[in-house]
Image (cartoon, rainbow, N blue to C red; front, side, top):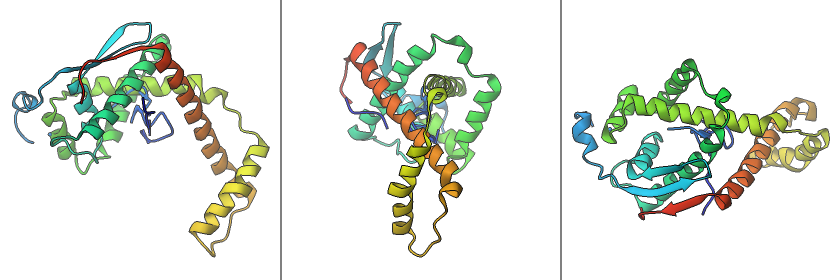
Length: 240
């Protein structure tokens, strides 16, 4: 199964955590509409069971609505006759979110607060052209405010879990920073902006450390997900 690409809000969005926010993440790992009554618009989506995910905790059902909700919270994607590629990307992302969420829920202390959910919701709305556009997308896929906040809470829990499991243990050495500066940072800057004054290593140190930290978190998260997919029972019930 192809790997998720969780920018938990950056999804989305910072490293993997953005991918799931985008939880991502991540929820990575959670995570995120015409002006007609929601009950009518919801009928536009013929819901069906798409897959089940069991990571040894419980069996989670993924429906077509879950995929449409995922697409609705991404402002660049069309909700009119979504193609198979977009739906499958959404499916793989939702599967990864469920795998991480099942692990994250073993640690109830990392759950998000109401204020954190509200802040995440406000930040999400800013990614759309207007609040009205955001609400129209929600209505089109029958995504209620309660369900929307539930998805945001899940994605915040995913982000917190990934931070707890990976970010707190990332160690970037001075050699790694110096090597990246010489081998990547300076050549890339000169290639993109010829003639621009190149910052010194000390001036670039903080930015490089952040880049390397996010890269390590993403690599560790990908390895974690590869292992989680192998252990889990993922059953595809209907193609999309």
